[in-house]
Structure formats: structure tokens, C-alpha cells
Image (tube, rainbow, N blue to C red):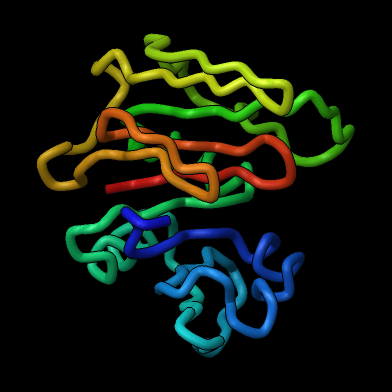
Length: 178
């Protein structure tokens, strides 16, 4: 998370992790996308702000808090689907672990139209296959100069081109906006 200045996650992930313990884990602002209002929660260096007015607002607030750093959008397929539907995805980094969990929200369900991607990198290990794809450029409806790009980061951060969106398909998805 060295390049990150803020995180976006879902209320389901926040509740499921109990706010990532006593210290909040992230040591930066976290914006929790939810339908249920909640007071701000501060745990150590982590501040959790609950956003009820949509993904665009969560991303805007996180970008403001992050300054020149990146913004990770982490977990919940629903949050990722909202970012995809809003045309906010410039590229996509998917981690596929050799485990089938058997339940959960499908990451690509309910998309209105195809999203064309160009495979840019494939990395394999015994623990996961990492697929990196860039948007073909005709999928976005937003102004990239206003929104910036995406970059993969996370616990196993890898260097690479800016404008990556990451997801972990193990227990939660991770995405990064910059």
C-alpha cells in the first residue's frame, strides 16, 4: 500500500472483517460504500467514512483524501460492478487462486455491455495466476483527465504501468484508482 492514499470497500467486507481489528489495518482513510448511514469510525491511523451516495461520490472523496497517491477499491463484487457500470475502469488486474469458494456475488454479473480488454501480462505461481488487462479505450464514458487512472497495489503489490485496477478473487476483490 506504499503508493496508496485511500481505500474504498463495501459495508459487507467492513462488517465481515469487523473493521479490520483494533487498529483498522490500513493506516489511511477508508471509504465504506453502504446504504446504511454510520458515524465515522477511527481506529489508530485508519479513519472509516461511510458513503451512502454512490460509487462516484466514494471515489471522489477518496481521491481528495489520497492527494497525489492512488486509491484502492477493495472488495465486494458489487462495488466493482458499480465502478464498471459507471465507466471508471481503465484496466483490470485479476488474481485467480486455485480455490473454488462456491458462493458469493459473481464479479461480472449484470453488466450492460461487453468490456473489451487487451491482455498485457500473465504471471503464474503455485498460489495464483495474475491476469493484467488494459481497456481497449472505447469502454469509458468518463473524462480520464478528470478521473485519473488505476494502478494495482495491495498486500502483494507489483510494479507496473499506471492505470491498473486490481481484484482478488479469493475472499474479496481489490481495485485501485489513481
